[in-house]
Image (cartoon, rainbow, N blue to C red; front, side, top):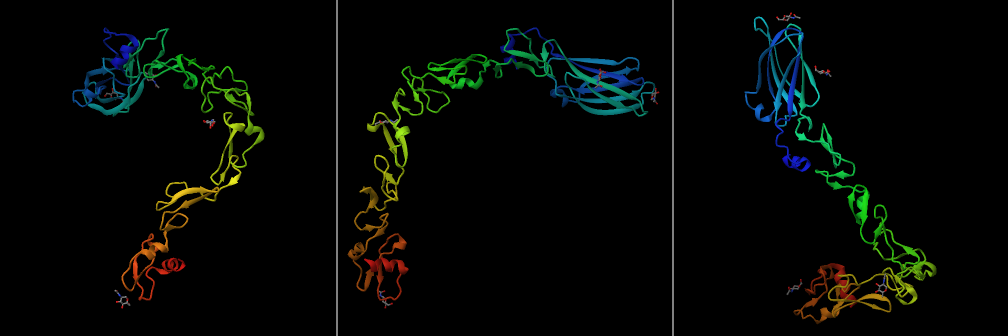
Length: 368
Ligand SMILES: *[C@@H]1O[C@H](CO)[C@@H](O)[C@H](O)[C@H]1NC(C)=O
Ligand SMILES: *[C@@H]1O[C@H](CO)[C@@H](O)[C@H](O)[C@H]1NC(C)=O
Ligand SMILES: *[C@@H]1O[C@H](CO)[C@@H](O)[C@H](O)[C@H]1NC(C)=O
Ligand SMILES: *[C@@H]1O[C@H](CO)[C@@H](O)[C@H](O)[C@H]1NC(C)=O
């Protein structure tokens, strides 16, 4: 808080109080009243709350009590109220009550045993220029100010300013991040950008059939974004993609630096300058597609794994039977490729009737 005060108003050494808590009591009968009340957290835990010594309240005049404070008060005040008969000091009532403590009156009524009443009204009355309900912020309006004092909130930032110290200047759209905001609502655009809120960027002076808009992706000042049908750095060439639609499949990208002025970006299954060739149903170039050191290659536009010696299959995932035949097994045993077990080559006792790993292994063996 002291930091805030320092920032906003220089320093006020002589300010001694923030305000006072005002308690008004209006009674229907003449009684003695004793009030304990608590407005600071430090005091509320102590049995020695602020104690107003017993006083007499008569119906003709409201009783007014004021307590000055120099620290912000609690948002609520706790009262313990004892009421006594004026003649024999017989208790007529005892009440404990918690009410909001703000700049506005909190009113409540305490009823006595013999059907009479006492009206209570409590509020904070802040010293001049002290704001908020607990009178905790000192704020003095100034004509040149970026803030406006507010009784309830302390202060509010003037339009166009924000932040805890009201020193952040606000501009619409934050100047599209292409400018600075020094005066509320007024953008100072960076080099190459213009518009009320820096929403445009300057095209190159040689831009013939094009413009540049900030909000479009990839806007760079002093470049030229060609209008439809135009191409080239200056928008002065015909866009072949637009007129000729040269790509059979895939996307056409206008590029005046290559011969013909276009490039075709082909989908996987197509190749050729105009994506006119169907090259393969699948593409083996992805990592892991060709296994066991197989190499992906394109032959005549067909994508295919070239397998290492001893392997076969679309993905080179199987061992060839040839490899198995080379393997030396004991007398009475034979090598069978077990493709169910990732191509291992165990030796099996061939005098046993059943195949060790089912039809798949047997089939692989017999076809080779
Ligand atoms: C309540 O008691 C007080 C004090 O004894 C007395 O002055 C007053 O008249 C009584 N009021 C009612 C309404 O009985
Ligand atoms: C609360 O009490 C005060 C002081 O007696 C009075 O001026 C005000 O009108 C009361 N407010 C309400 C809502 O009764
Ligand atoms: C145009 O083609 C050239 C040469 O192939 C290349 O370096 C450049 O990146 C291409 N431009 C675009 C926009 O694709
Ligand atoms: C091979 O299998 C046959 C028939 O079950 C059996 O008699 C023979 O002992 C086996 N040979 C070996 C080395 O396990």
